[in-house]
Image (tube, rainbow, N blue to C red; front, side, top):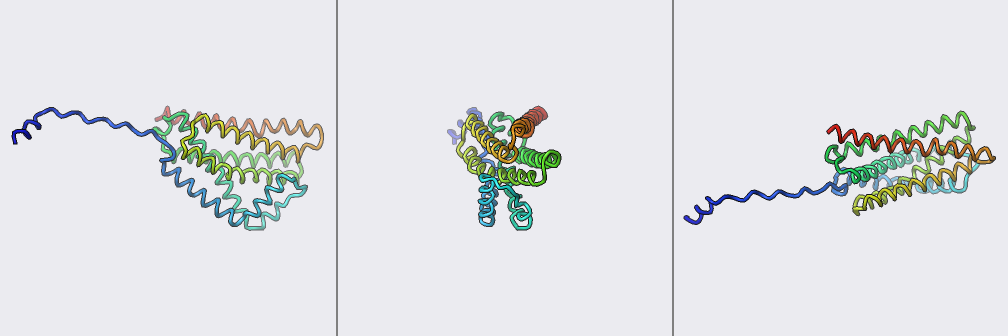
Length: 246
């Protein structure tokens, strides 16, 4: 009894402060749910439109002279392909979130992950939709209807397969704690490869004369490089606004 009383009179040591665990996307339930949903969407679409996607890839490489756009619109593949385009935008948004949260950890301390990912995905959707409208408008002015349809079909094919490439890449950078420089390098390499395929298709479609090559180079810089730089810089400014506001 006396010993217990003496121990109770001794000054108690202050509790040790715990070390907070730094944020990691692999521990975020929103990121996990999004990737799981993308896996099921990819499996579902491939089980129903695998042959059509393979035909689209062959047409992109071998360069058809006439478009099958009307045949596509009458089938049931269009809704699956729209899902693939949406999945590409979602995965691009997750990839951007992983990069920006690693580049500036203050972002995830001030902004909920679902809000940041949703904003990046919405920006990607708007970017794709705006480029679709721009391609259609310029094709209506400078090209004939058949060439415009062929390019829009080819552009859509790039978006379909970009989603399939992004899925394992996003899994790698999220769950294997890849260093930020490697994440940036992988994104740049994927971007460069995508633009090489774009130039290849443009040359096959539009570069039939010498002036066509000049047209391709001019419009490639205006339609492919500049909008991507504007999108990236706009997201950087948005992140800075979020951090300063909160």
